[in-house]
Image (cartoon, rainbow, N blue to C red):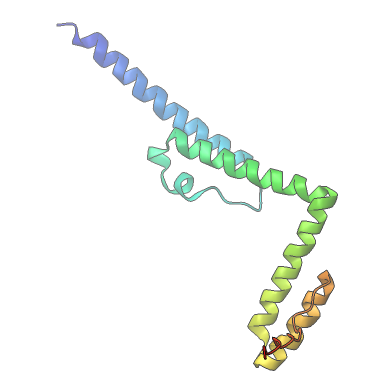
Length: 128
């Protein structure tokens, strides 16, 4: 009938796909940074791992690498400083108990970048 050749080719293709998935899982498990986890799709779809999952994981790692490289530049150090200030401001918001204390605390945080939180707004002049 001639179907034997097609079935054998199909069987080989499935085996090659299973081997490629196993190789990808092994590769990504060994190469992942110690402090990072693999993407959700990658971790939970071992039996149905797709090429797009591997590509997404590589894009994620490349993005993290770019962020680290940017922080090494002068502009990046300023960006890192602003991120730290944002984190500090968020912590301040969560810890303050009253609106008055919040305004004073945020004024102290924002002064570090040259702005003030509490500024008096001049009244609009009345038209006569």
